[in-house]
Image (cartoon, rainbow, N blue to C red):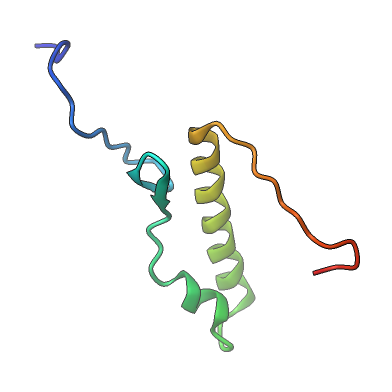
Length: 78
């Protein structure tokens, strides 16, 4: 039986790289990302995997919101 006409409170996508908490608020749901990126004993492959997961999540969130980020940095470097 189709669910047309029935109100939906939430929709979940099991392949999404982020969790939408509100209309303008999302989480990448990666509670250990800070540790993975700042651990002095972490291997390069582990850091690259953590960065890749963050990039995938940010890309998915930005595409879903339909926005293009503006990244600014001073001319002399950061």
